[in-house]
Each structure stands twice: as structure tokens, then as C-alpha cells.
Image 1 (cartoon, rainbow, N blue to C red):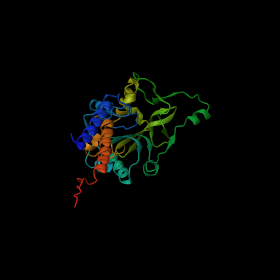
Image 2: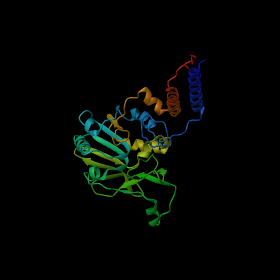
Image 3: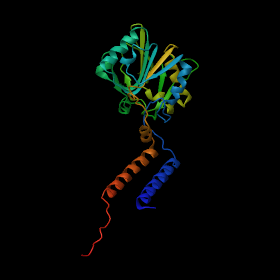
Image 4: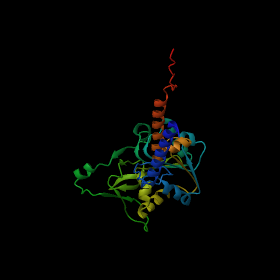
Length: 289
């Protein structure tokens, strides 16, 4: 076997053993908050994605803006994101969409103030542990959310980790409180035209980690029960953006083992080219005169 072939064989062997080692290693839990419908990690939304067909007649998924969807869909509109920062065109399209008799439920930890909340004459505040202590209340590891009009057969309160809820709506007369945390509104209903807008500051409740609890599953069912049974469109644009096509390279880079092997091959190939780029030439024999 020539020197070049031996070098390539060694690199390929190392890459193969590395891939096998990574695939055989226990899979690490991804604790990132993604809210993506296909993610089975604790803070993905695979379970709610599987549950929706039982709650609505027709479920559609999109990665488009509200502005792009407003003229093409009807019925219920759903947004789940860590931060909801719509453009001015999105806000106008949303309000026009609702005024025609459609409904929208937006669950987000943080809502854009100037472009969204101010337009609706709403405001939010941070749920801080320091405020609880200053008010003389006892701090606990969990907090309870309760509906203002609970069903008699359902739990009166739903527990969450104390750091799971970041914001709440400041009290006002221009919306109806549907659920609260210690009298702090976290799920509200606001009329606009013929339709209704529902806003929730507990998007974490829609994730796999919480939906495994029976109580949270009931909570989500009650929230969705405010939306009429019919067409339901979930856009993930405000959390994920536009989902691009999954090319073979994109798939490789999304898998940790394949990504490391890919980088290892590229680095090894770079060393190979660097050392082999020198021109090879036979030694010219010296012919005596």
C-alpha cells in the first residue's frame, strides 16, 4: 500500500471509530427552549403538536408571518414563542384578521411593548421573587395559576416552578382576566371587532416537560377551549423563523456525532493537502563527465 493510501486509510479509520463512539454514547438531553413542534426535548412542543388534532377540526402549520397568513387562512391562529416581536404590518394584519370574527391565541414570555402592547393599550411587568419577599409573602419553589371561572371537575390550581413564569399583565379595564397567579393576570381575553385575542405569558406550559403532568394538560385544554372548534393555524415564525430546506449537509451539522466527524475529516483533509501540495520529483542522477 502506497504512502498516500495508508494516510487516507488511517484518516477513514479514525473517522469511523469516532462516529461509532459518539453514536454509542448516551444521548445528552437538550434543555434549550425551542417550542418547536418536532422537538421531543423537555422544552420542545412535540406533545402539543400531537394533541392538537383531538382539539380542532383541521390543524395547519406554517413558518410565515401573520401578515403573510392573514389573507390565506381563517379560523384560529396560534403563536408560541419566547419573545413575540411582530412588525407593524403583522400587528395591523392581526387586528384586521381578528376584527373579521377570527380568534388568535399568542403565548409568549415577553411581548414587544412599542409595536404590540402599546397598540392594544396593554402593559406587562416582571414577576420578580424580590417583589414577593418585599410584600411579606413566603417564597416557595413553585407558584400556582388558577382560572377565574374554573370548571368544577378540574383542579382549582395548577403548579409551576417559580422561575417558569417571567411576566404578567398589569391590571386594566380593557381586557378580561381568564387566569392569574396570585391575582396577577397571566392569561387574558381582549375583544377586537367581532373576534377575540387571547394572550398568555406562560408559553412554558405548552412544552413537553409540563404536558407530561396531568394538571398542565388540563390547563392547556381549558385555554384552547376558548377557541372555537374549526380550522387552527400554528405559525412558528416568531420562534424559529423561516424553516429552510433540510439539505444533507444541514442534517449532518444538526447531529452532534456526524458534525464532529465532518469537521475531523475536513481538518485531516486540510493537513493532507498541506503536506502533499509540495511537488514530488524523482532524484535526477548525476552523470559523471
